[in-house]
Length: 273
View 1: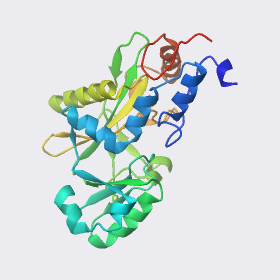
View 2: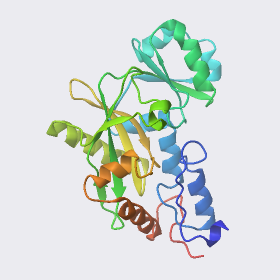
View 3: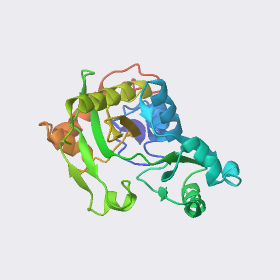
């Protein structure tokens, strides 16, 4: 059935969706796929791997450490503070989606519960220092010509939790400012970070790059989403609508870009069937 399709549009989130699994299935069937190929999806889903790519590319990331289940059994907050720095911390699954399993830790007594919640979603967990600043996201769209278009920055207004949690993402209470009010130097840096990581991770089609902007104006990477929300009310469509790319044009453009012949590694886009 898959081999009979003209193109696959894998608008699915989380493990098994945007982690390259569906792109791999489409590649095996020789069917073009909207979005990133296998390797890029897997890299971007793995938050630790994304951090390593970002650091190697000169992009700032929050101080953090990676814990396996075995390591978490013996770790304590004092040891983590040496690597991560002072609390508050964010504890999250390495390969989670939609902020599920993510907790904020403000005191040592909260660490065990936060680790347990994160390990319920993954076998590896990140503990990272909470970045004080504004959360600003940008969207990247690859045109059929190969040109990259970066949409206007969107600011997420966070409340008490200090991060964009799962409830806020889906209960309709999320508040955004579009375009985000930024000084030109910061806006240019976010644009550069988005383009750099799109290329370095090997993304295709589309991505949303989420950053923090500190009070000092430093741009710190949060994460890269290779298949961000695509309802008409999601962030990425809103960003491109603000610059005249409406929803039908956005979706049709993604399909046409996917159908473009490509020699990208890890995919058989445009392969004869």
